Amino acid sequence: MKFVDEAHIRVEAGNGGNGCVSFRREKFIPFGGPDGGDGGDGGSVFLVADPELNTLVDLRYTSAFRAEHGQAGAGANRTGRSGADLRITVPVGTEVYDEDTGERLGDLVSAGQELLVARGGFHGLGNTRFKSSINRAPRQSKPGTPGEKRQLHLELKVLADIGLLGLPNAGKSTFIQAVSAARPKVADYPFTTLHPNLGVVSVDAHRSFVVADIPGLIEGAAEGAGLGIQFLKHVSRTRLLLHLVDIEPPDNGDPVEAVRVIARELEKFSPELAARERWLVLNKIDLVPAEMRDDICNDIVRRLEWTGPVYRISAATREGTGVLVNHIMERLEQIRREEAQSQATAQHPQEFPDQPL
Image (cartoon, rainbow, N blue to C red; front, side, top):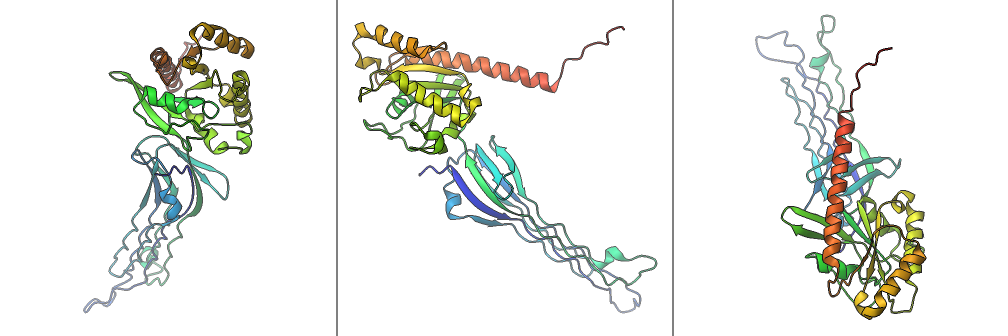
């Protein structure tokens, strides 16, 4: 299915039903009094995160959604039926914005999570509500309020632990194919990958992580060049970035400049993202004679002045991928422990005893 990561939809909640003006008229009951019932509440509109979905393409073809209106009240103090709520399924990882105000309404990051995007109208009041000792035959009622209407901008950002960065043909699709069951398209021309691919990497029982193959970026991506900014945002949720670089580019390009190009685009797009932990992965070492590998790899690291972790792999032959995967798993487990500890500290701040003056 075609990958679509943005959609624009209009949602309308149901109007509340009007209250009823009615009087009880029965034989032998001369003073029946008012008996107009209230209307029903209008239905609300919710977005629901569905783990089975991985695209917003369906919302491209159906862009208007309306919940059910509440029914009007009736005589004999009968309340109108409330309108049914409308639930729209979207992929996990969808961010929701109000197009008119630019307000971020929510972020659906877990399966089954619901977000109220348009509240249904409140029910109207029947004339029974207005009776009193000085107004025994009220002829007024209250109409239901209209439901909320919103124009929404939905933006899908893939959820992954690891994001793969690199210029086109750096070997990212081959890498994700080597370490997971994902089977992205692999070819010897640039921009083979036109949408993010996710793969689950299983290290052993109950130890796994998700890696995202982000489509190749080029210089100017932050301004929309190439596949553009639409895919840069997908790395914003990752915990760790792997920067893959072809140590022997087929066009005789400079691997060092290839790394710097992506680094500049990250900085333009988001300084926070540029500061995220990033590992350098020197790929395609199988294309270089064994006696030359050390010199070439050491030269790249020296010219980059790289101080973080560096790995040498061949995604095609899987040389070095096992060690890299194990180290990634260990680092992710450490990050998860730190996040859990930080969360627990935030929920239960440490209490210090009063100090004597």
